[in-house]
Length: 500
Image (tube, rainbow, N blue to C red; front, side, top):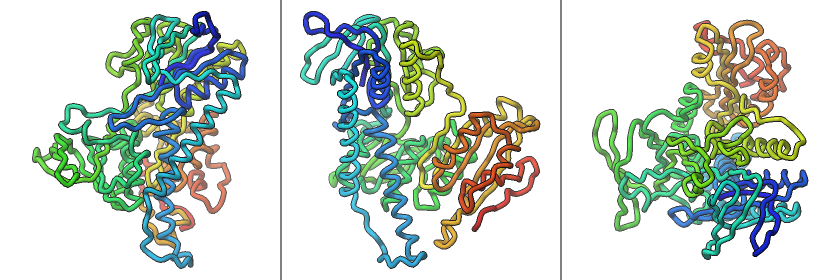
């Protein structure tokens, strides 16, 4: 994936870039379309290097093809399985057990993704954005060289270039057999057949989301974690997420690291790992090993040094300022490829739109990366916005922070007698009145929908007092946020609230 730009045909079949150049995916497509709508001549340069397992996809980037979209659809498939099990409690005569057909689900999800690929191509064409399916790298600060799959080269030059190449999953290449026999999130959504018994290695949100929907679809699933789950998120909430997953059947191997993957004669994968607590070596057999140990930015093949673009030598991400500009003022970097930016599609899209407006002279607004909401789509969803409890304490001091919290029982869980012991809400506030809300954390059904609504208030500087004066919509899970009265400082157990 690389470069989106405004292009004019030059002599000799080349293109001479006059306004905007950017790098790939749905984020690149959205930015290119935004720039084109503002009157710029724009082109998108986009290329997908196949995964080590040979998986490739069309225009749209990680989110559309191997991220948010297929993930949420398969998460929905898993949730439907739970609803089917609840159905008899509500009077529906549904024969149990109900079997799941991976092939049928995969075909439907993949067809939808392909329709989005086509939609992006059509939108680019309608808005007169030139599309190049070539792998690009910098020749100098105004020129890139693109190479087609067949090896044909094209030189493109531009006044402005925006890099939005995103990242790809990291492989633990130091582990024997990891590359040869493992898959990543680049592959899981494009499997034609069920992955079967699966070992998910990692504790990231990608690891837990994939493990969650695999368990929900009835597959034997184990998560191997070296350290803590959901690093960077509130750790109390993270522990509740994994506790719920364990209660639903996902197995966890904590403080373990794999050392070898071998393929057995029957095609199964034998994994050897070390228990870091006991120092003992263990083995297990799985049909699929899924690596979810983080992502690395797509910068290594861009020849950034030819343009004088500076990167963080540790993360390999591009250094940018508040204007999204790199060390070369007319070259910008947006999204996961940029240092210090949240790895979230909506922030990258908004940053790109704002950049296009600034380049066109329509606005001076820059992206505000504070209080960006997000949701982890585990079986019990975790939505959050603002600071974690740990971050709030570190930034403001424990004595200046008040945390209100409560367990609750969703009404939907009552008739079906579902376990609600991990449904939990926490609001992190400044202790001094009016107690500005620093962070909100919600664990429960439809967490994304709940968090999105409260995110606006928190973005606008809402206080605890204002949230408590907000009338809840009854009977919903979201109303429980406006009923938080128990402080963690009080030493009392958080009240179990809700219609249940």
